[in-house]
Amino acid sequence: MNRVLSIRTALQFVLLALVLLVTGHAEEPRKPTLFLIGDSTVKNNTRGQVGWGTPLRELFDGEKIRVENRALGGRSSRSYLREGLWAKVLAEIKPGDFVLMQFGHNDNGPLDEGKARASIKGNGDEAREVTIKESGATETVHSYGWYLRRYIADAKAKGATPIVCSLVPRNIWKDGKVVRSTGDFVRWAREAAEQGGAQFIDLHEIVARRYEALGRENVQPLFTPADHTHTSKAGAEFNATCVADGLRQLRDSPLAALLTDEPRRSAASESR
Image (cartoon, rainbow, N blue to C red; front, side, top):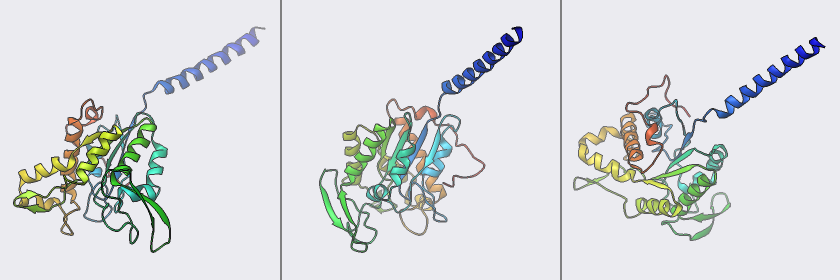
């Protein structure tokens, strides 16, 4: 009888230990993830060119948040959705996560041929049925703002916090000032964020003002010799600090508290 009781007691202790183990893991706070989506100005795999999403990762406390840079060069607000890139990100999003988006550089061009990545200009609900000349595939094309509102709505439906960034400016100057896109993509991004209930960072203006403070000659090394759009490592780091400052300026943003005063230096740079 005593032996039976001893076995029963031992089993009870084992069961209790298992319960405590499971409960302890369940109560452990989950580390949120910040997903970055966008084009080559956010993530760039071309040698010598770096997007701001790569150094941004080092500006966050890695013990408190994960940063996943899922941007891809050459993509627009339209093609990022069409190619299924957003679907892959969306499948991983969990409540408490964040989505930081920046599109616009590739949203110009033809709607139905070549890379066929252009969106309809504006922030309206108009749509156009097109047939891609090279493939014969049909597609319903929406406005730039519509695609941003789609990303916002999808992220919110998964319990994530969406944040819209206006596109970083190109290295184009006129009369000593950086040429701005405030009348189109910046305005449409702001409108889409407001309509979708997302936070908005006017990264375009933040960066442009800082470029002007540096002066055109000093800004040149922040870009690659290839063109006026893609940044060097120094330029990506410069823009990343602008993103971080934009996050700090947001009202009641929990991301601001997860930023560090000094960049983290990981053993290896981000490769994803």
